[in-house]
Amino acid sequence: MMSMQKQDCHPVITEDCINCGACILVCPMEAIEISDSGNSWKIYWWACNCCWACARECPVSAITDINA
Image 1 (cartoon, rainbow, N blue to C red):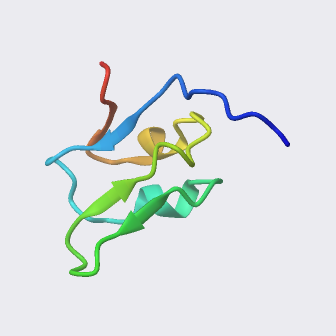
Image 2: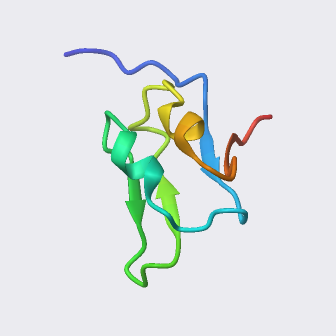
């Protein structure tokens, strides 16, 4: 069994998010999901590989590290 390593990053989507969906399209880990209501997004940090493609793609810089 492979051991799980603690992630060095904990990305979150801030209130600046405009719900454009750009982040979900570039996430290689499929770690971003839209809420059932369709008006908010969530990053599952435990599934994230810390590549930050989502943050680079975000047009309003709404993705940050919770530890930042």
